[in-house]
Length: 48
Image (tube, rainbow, N blue to C red; front, side, top):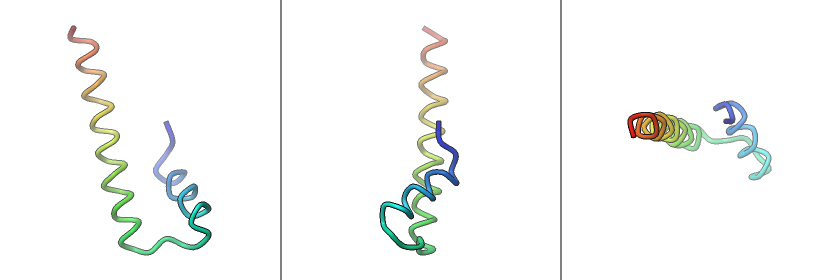
């Protein structure tokens, strides 16, 4: 799993520019949701 900083760096490189504040906030939200879903998936896997 990539760290949040790596996600930001990869996105910055793909865009070819620095990220704007609202883009960083969106990536934070998206990364948080990704982590939460991964944890839920692990819990479902172990409780079956």
